[in-house]
Length: 632
Image (cartoon, rainbow, N blue to C red; front, side):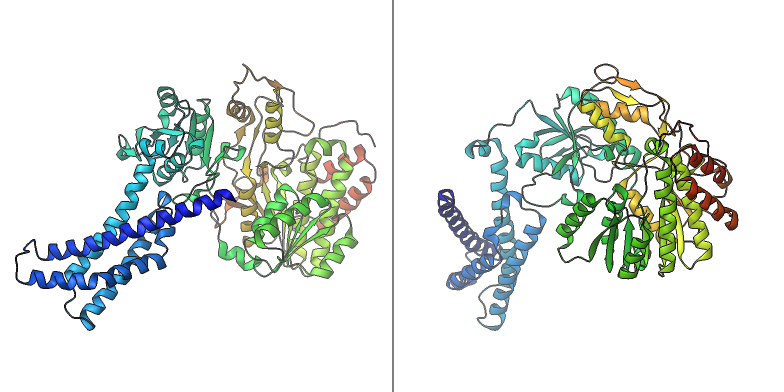
């Protein structure tokens, strides 16, 4: 409290000084403008008369300008962080009294001032008031000013490299200069040849992005900040590799939308995360089509508390649904998601969490009869490949029979659109989980052909950061000191980020050709060995030197290489109107045979034994199971 009382007189004194300074600037500007109008001919006969008129009217003119400055909040601006908006604001504060002086001169007291002198005075006031603030800002950032303010000297052992010499790079340099905790920018790099040899806020641009490693050595760089918001995909991956190879801590813009904003930026930069290592080009959505089937509708998301399901809920909320139903058997994650959405959108949002299992047909019927959803996203499933090899009956009960329950309830309660989330593991499956997902795709096709629902499946690969995925496992192993365990040195996987997957699922739902299987463009497969080495280097270790990579062999049901389409789909896939979504035409399915096989599968799933796997193999000829002794 005492600190506040001490600060108030200081603030008042500062504002009084600024008011007096501005009053002097206004007086000088009008006198100098009149002098310029006279072209220095002070001996002219009109000069004494006009000068006397100016002196008579200066008091109210000065008062008018100061009143405008006070009303416009000029003395509340922190000029240390001022930008273009503040200068535009200053221009508006000067334009108002300039207009008033013009009006008085023409309609009230003729001959107060020449119009040209009035205009020149306005320009001078803008330059001098704005220039005085800028000069003070430059002085504060000068080493002499910093010493007077008691700012500690920048640590020469923490020099920073800025990657990018555009608007974001300039903003990052300013942020670092206003907050010494980020370090001291000493060099910037950029691929634009025009910027080479130039300086940004005193920081030289000394090379291209490819020269990051050698410049880090030359300037003894301690930290690297990547400040190029447009850098994405393989190019960002390459730049991250270059930065990580220097063993310097690497940061990136936490929110590109902050670029150009004013004020002290806390948390302006963040540490790299796993999604940055596999950066992909930004997804472009047809928001109009997605809004057409989501806005104002009741949307049900099964498995809504899971990794993909929760992101689907977040994305759906962007399109203002009439009601969002989060359906999950696990209450904790669903509750946390509800709290997150309420914090973002307000406590009165139309979101309801419903606890239940897709195995329970009666519970599903209650939900559909009570809330009447028109769109269903089905993300609930058992997904962990090795676990389902041990418990194939549970995979069948949940993934196959649960999906059948959901499709049946949805079709009986006038659902318009049903989107099933599938996986690349459904293609030529070697795992029980993948096989059950392939049967789900077949269920989608049968319901699409025999009901009024638009039923589609969306097939994609691994998503970064999902529960049980490889990257969180690697990170945990590295933090514990290793070893990092890898199933096979040649194993490859397709990856995309959780938001990207969720957005493309929404887009595929908008396309909704009944019975179609949509395949998302996963880009090029990633060698898991390369990914492991990237993460190890990111955490400051060297693979095989101070961090061991241990090959442990493929787990039950795992493949070396995942596939996104089956043999019969090869050459028949066609690109949709969205360049990242492909579609496979529905296959012919003998309904009588298929439903008899489903009954046999349900009967086999009463016991967790080889009979379940045998029945799956009968239903899916491309299934090559990993035989294991199963215990009930």
